[in-house]
Amino acid sequence: MGFWQNVEDECEYLGISRKELAKKADFSVHTISNGIRRDGMPAADLALRISKALDVPLEKLLDWNENIEPMESPEQIQNQKLLLKYLPILKKINEMDADSKRAVVTIIEKLG
Image 1 (tube, rainbow, N blue to C red):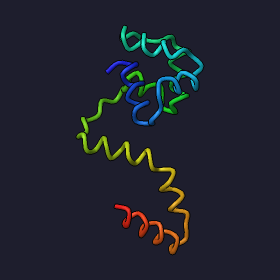
Image 2: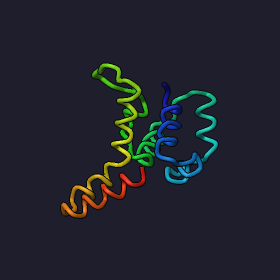
Image 3: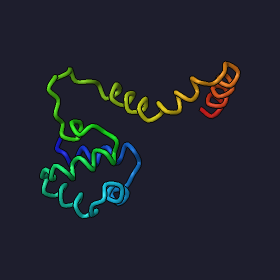
């Protein structure tokens, strides 16, 4: 995958629009559209601003990995995304006392 496809994937994962990303990274929303259409590499400063706006390492957007790791199954990838998405909430739950934790688990179980 190229840089812009990775940006699109991260936006989808985070639930933000191209317009929101453009505002956070201080560039034109048309820049994303042009980048995707041309499948080109952005200038270094723009790539870094996008990386910071998405809060992901630039290497991830560039698909640059010096250590080739075994491919993960789609289920493993989905689980990792879920963990990253809900990690802040899990940390807060972990800090709760035992009774509060049980209450949260009970609520979640009743919802599902």
